[in-house]
Length: 455
Image (cartoon, rainbow, N blue to C red):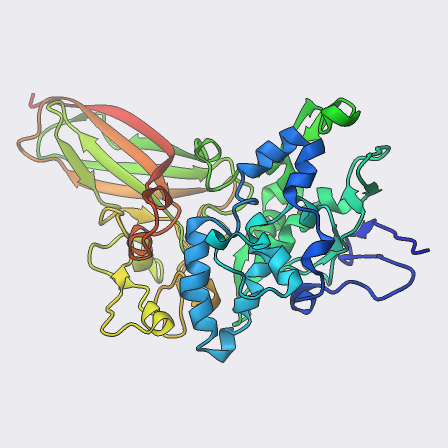
């Protein structure tokens, strides 16, 4: 008889899995260690947990392999690069450790394309998460989860029984480190190219003990197994996993405070504006995760009484590398696509996509071995300045504008908006992604009204 202990010891990051037999492997060593057959398909779980299953089916956890950008990035960038450059060869398998864990654990590398319908399409499946018992080492990263699939499923609520499987009470599933096994990543150069859990840990939410699950899996009253004798509870974790791909989560993530040097202006006068931009919602950086491909920017415009629009450009603050954080109409980047895809005479793509020139971009530039901006996180050898929005932290941006002599008299509306694009628009179009992948989403907005008069 094999006796299993499922309590994860957070301090050392290792769960005691068994008193006999070899311990399950973690990280790169787990490649090919668990056949597909050891994991129940998602539809089996849905039979007893229909409501939870419906939430999960609409989440990015379910679409981690089939999502259009993830598919394109893996098959058209990561795999070709891994087959050309020894330093990054591990990404051919490693990407799947988090995006298609069933395929990675089964050694099915590369998995078939989503259109071919393999079990890789199950993404981060129900049974993957509920078979994780802990993690290896001191820091969760690069899929170093320890996974032990079988008839026993890991959960956090004591005193439950199920007609379909055994339940092991494992507090690890409710800890932020559980999420960190995939939401922290070091690339082949040893850089933290994803550090969402570490950002949380070092920030005010982590220090206050507000965990990832409290925002991305909020508790609500309900019954997770209503048709098979499940009990009602006041705090059932919802399996929404809402994040950067859901407008309801993005709405209001940023607040902007606007102030002006003058309330009453005359044509030809000078106006000084200050915009205080604050990350008021996310417990990590904005943007976080795959920050190399995401664009967050502040756009400020004035609208006069006649409805004429004037675009205002941010005043440089003077820090090193700042040019990478102010949108340019002419700057090119992503030239490493030429080496990755074997392109000839490739000059690069518009670095900032559709962001209006002169707007402030809140970004962490990822730089390839030649110092050029890249969206291939595995090809990141250094970083530019980290000018993102930390949690509960504000950045001040300044604008100076000389009003035109012919500006209309009357109310002058100053409008500031922070926008977010999931993928740089130029990259998205080059990769033939659907428009929803790069269409701007509003994170926050603010406005003030001034008065223009000739008297």
